[in-house]
Length: 427
Image 1 (cartoon, rainbow, N blue to C red):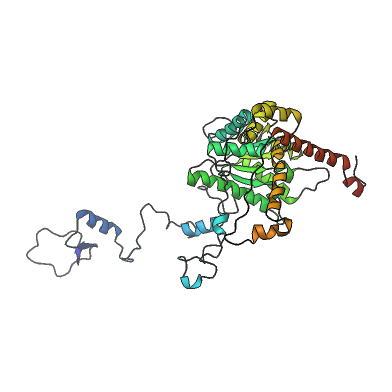
Image 2 (image 1 turned 90 degrees about the horizontal axis):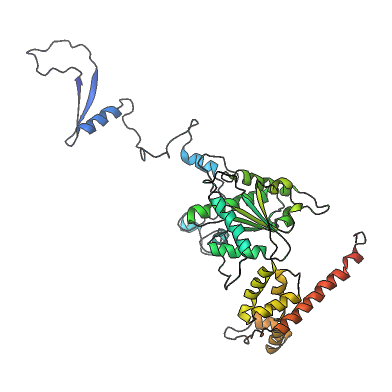
């Protein structure tokens, strides 16, 4: 490559003589090479700079990684500041740092349960069998889920939360899980025990994290998801002189804010315009929503659904429960009519109680309760337990179990031993 410096006006034909003194004229640089093209010459002419001839090459003309803000901070700096990265497993992992420092004592990862804690969603492979889903329940839950996924297309205010409430043991959670399995939904499930903590603000942050996790299931896996909180009134309800804690207030405020702004959810990082969370529905269950802060359960934020199964629903659910035991529909009708006004879990407890006698016989077959621990936990590798034979279910056995459960219920209500220990309790 040769570099020449020529005046702007270079004559096409040289005169016969040159002047002795040439006036100073502006000059420019020309880069010549064997493979130069006119476009390359033009680009080199536009990018030339005599003061700084070497310019740093950008990764891409469309890349924003090197773009800096008014304070001189690039994209990577802003991204690290905005993200609330609490990943403690990275850093002591093989392939991330030198293998000399990872060790082989407890494996290659510093956090051995990291992979398990990342699975926050729930699948329902354990629900094997043909269960009955009440049509009214299915219609309400499915409609709420679909409306929230179509909220951006509907010109109407859609409540984010569906509150399913009703009597104890009526199958609210189980029916909801059956619907999730039927619709292929992978939900994130919380319980009332997670709504309190010894650290202020932790439950509210946990709800926002779980909500964002459900949103990421939609974005990354292409599956429908939702956030479900079981027995919310047990964690947020106020009963008698129950004290209202700071975490109760923060949880209520968090759920109210999610209902009002379901696509803008912060877990502590700086806000950025591109951080848009996918809207996912929230489903909560409880027994008495009148104990919850009233603005949270207002119609604009929460849609309420009172679940009280009809007699037909109870018969169908119980029949599917006993169908594999050979109990006919007419026998199920006689059992339900014998024990009216009972919750659905009562009929499940009937079947469980019939196993007691056969389990007692099985304990005797293995040698009694004295060696039960050795047989169950410390038996030899090739030693097998005696075969357990489930009992043959009959209507008589189920009725006997039902009367036993009724006696226990009545005994609790009649005795009330707490009256003798706490004299200040009113009748």
